[in-house]
Amino acid sequence: MNKERRKHKRVEMEMLVTLRTQGRLLPASTVNLSLGGACLLADYNEKISEGAAEIVFDFDKKSKDVAL
Image (tube, rainbow, N blue to C red; front, side):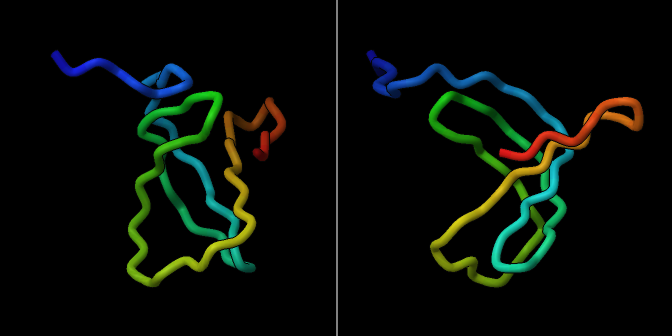
């Protein structure tokens, strides 16, 4: 049996987002989210160095963007 050892439950959610890091805006999409982080897919081949990053969720034109 493979027991889940993650601290926070992951919720599968596919949504288009923008990853803001090192002065760049990179289009991406979420795979899953949890209280501890997010798994993203992006079509980007360069290495991203360690440092601050922000995920911008753009829900629709009526709602404000949310950045984490």
